[in-house]
Structure formats: C-alpha cells, structure tokens
Amino acid sequence: MGLGEGALLGLIQGLTEFLPISSSAHLAIVGTLLGSDDPGAAFTAISQLGTEAAVVLYFRRDIARIVSRWVLALAGRVPRSDPDVRMGWLVIVGSLPIVVLGLLFQDQIETVLRGFAVIATTLWVFALLLGAADRFGRKERTLDRLTWGHGLLFGLAQSLALVPGVSRSGGTITMGLLLGYTREAAARYSFLLAIPAVVGSGLFQLYDELSAGAQVSWPATVLATAVAFGVGYAVIAWLMRYISTHSYTVFVGYRIALAVLVYALVAAGALPAFNGTDFG
Image 1 (cartoon, rainbow, N blue to C red):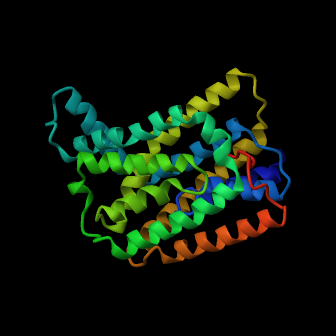
Image 2: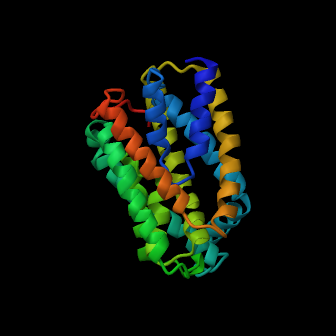
C-alpha cells in the first residue's frame, strides 16, 4: 500500500467514524471503486485506534475523572453511588453486547453481511430510523438519568455496527434519541461507549494478525493513523457543536443518497452485490 492510499483511507476513517454515516461502508465503497487491495485487518485495527485516540483526547477530562473515581470506588475510598463511578459501570455494561454478539456471529459478519446490497439496505433503513428518532424523541433526558437498562440498550444498538452500513455512532445515537435523551447526551455516551469496544477489538485483532505473520505496510499505516486521529478529533469537536443547535436531518439525507448511489453501482456492475471487500 502506498502513502497516498494510506492517507486517503485515513482521511475517510477520520471523517466518517464519528458521524452517523458508517465508516466501514465508506471504506468498502471507496476501496472497491479504486480497485485497491484489502488493506488488511492489522491496518484497519491500527487506524481505528487512531480515531479512538481522538475520542480519548477530546473527552480526556471526563475519562480521567470517571476512571479515577471508579478505581477509588473499588478501593472503598469513593461511594459506589458517585455519578462518575456509576458512569464507569454503565460503560462496562454497555460494552458487553458487542463482545458477545461479535463472537457469536463472527462468521456471518465476515461473510454474508459484507455485500454491498446489505450495505445499501442498512444505509437507508437506519437513515429512516435515525430521522424518526430525531423527529419524535423527547430529547429531555441527560446522562445523569441514564439507567442500567438503557445502558444495555445503548450497547445492543452499538452491536448493530458489526453490520457494515449501520454506523456505530448512528446506532447508539438513534437508540438514545428513541429513549428520550438529548442529542448531546446520546452522542457523548455513544463516544464513551465506543472506546473499550474499539480499542479492545482493535488490539485483539492486531495481535491476532501479527502473531499469524501478517504483513503490514508500516509507513502507510502510520500515516493513515495520524490522519485519522487529526481529522477524527476535528470531526468530534464540530459534531458536538453542530448537534447543539441542529438536527440530524442532513445525515439522514446523505445516507439515503449514498444508498441510492450504491444500488446504482451494484446494478451497473461496479460493485458486487454480495461478499464485498472487507475493510473492517
């Protein structure tokens, strides 16, 4: 893989990871249209760690406070009822579904669910769900009112991102809006929830690939990760400002338009309807 391709894939990863438009769908579409070789699971894992590093940096104060209070609570030095301790446990609980479902359905996720017909369908279906949730959700609950049951439902929504085209942030934000949370609260918990899931799966996938002798184009991979980190940070900062005064309508329209384009490209033979390239 050349530096140009690595930079392009890093740019796409950074632009689409946190917006509710599916980074996996974009990487698969662009990579296939350009005739690129599969960059490999190791490349995908490392570049995703770059975008998650952006989340950690942006929410560093929240994360440091939650982690430190959670650890102190384990030592009995902070009450378990402390809001930050509770949020730490809620992130753990919300991370469980994607781990369990990812292991149970790994074969299906890596084969039959990778086709572009599936991607196009999930793009428009979840666009309509996001639009409905944004339109009819009460948008009144804040994160201090997050319940254990709601945390689990957020986690189940995150696990839907195992299917390309759904979007990790799109699934969790949609669930949050349906449950009555504000746009900012749903997005914030979505980003916090993604950290253990993406970092954990990324490190595991990276270890698995490297231990199996996978070849990694390190210059392109490092460049892609750096680009994904920088762009991803800018996107998070922009999105948190944007949703404070705007709806998700623009993303709903974009997803539907992209779905139509993918259907057209499949019909023209430019993209395979099934068993599309796995870009993670």
